[in-house]
Image (cartoon, rainbow, N blue to C red):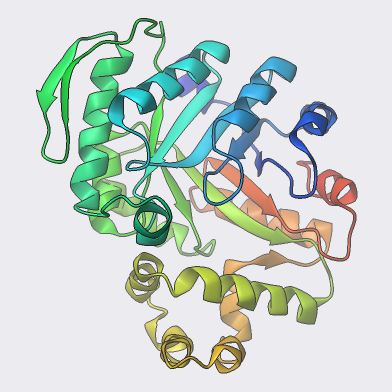
Length: 324
């Protein structure tokens, strides 16, 4: 399947695995997703399961689903092992797997994995270049700027290497995605922000976006949860700079200042309702679907819902948010 084929019809994804559901029980959930009209399941790799295993299970149980990972850090596996992992899943799900690569953050890379978080732009650039060669079955003997590979060749190269999407926030990384990747992954932005971000790509490539969704009409509860999520993410340096670039510096400055001062409650309370409403989708099922549709209208090709089912059963939420 070519890149054009994968974007020819509407795609509608959801984040897996689902919290509170053991991996062996995901088979029926994957089957239900396909029945309900979801086209994609996308994993992640932070502090839960790894990014590949839930997709390997989906490949075996529901081969009709498109698979993606958003994202695998460029630092936490050696280049050869990373190529092997990507190749294995591409072989398991031929033409149904998209590999998402990103820098991740200093917390995950350095604090949790003990790897220096240095030269992130060059690291992802070099990793993409290496993967292009390795997945094509070439022998790689190259000193890149950020690592060196001596004489590695995949024993099982894949016939059709998967698309490589790059996670990007600000202009430099977005332009790199436009030049070197097959698609881009964006997150923690509003539907209107999409129109600011995508022109920086400088190329027409598929856009995947992880969108946080709380399907509840209890706005106070949804905003309280949203505020906790915003403080957890947007106090990380790369996301703070992203939102300054997007123009939210003034709105979020009190939150950043109070957080740095150790006033967690004050930081939460300082986040304006309108910022939460922009960045976290909430409301009735119909309102949530309409809000997600705004992302698509503004340039997202693959919306990937991250569902937080507070006050509603997970199965009901998954069905209620399914495409219509």
